[in-house]
Length: 82
Image 1 (tube, rainbow, N blue to C red):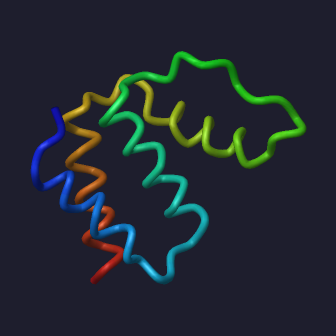
Image 2: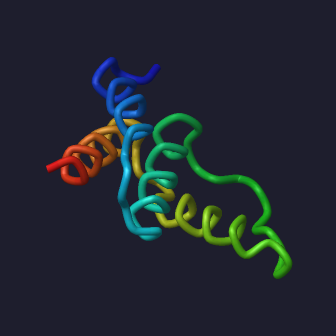
């Protein structure tokens, strides 16, 4: 179960007004790893570049524990608001 601090960061990130695509993909990958765990889905095909980018971002966090993913997510959210 996600921590209260993680859930607060997830709410806070929705108010983010400027972030690079790379940062958004990192946030996505960390969020998915923290809430779902390792990616077990097939990689999207060549006609879905956005889906492939998101899949790759999540796959890059493979084997990171949910707790570590939460900590990294919170730290990244805080750095984006600094």
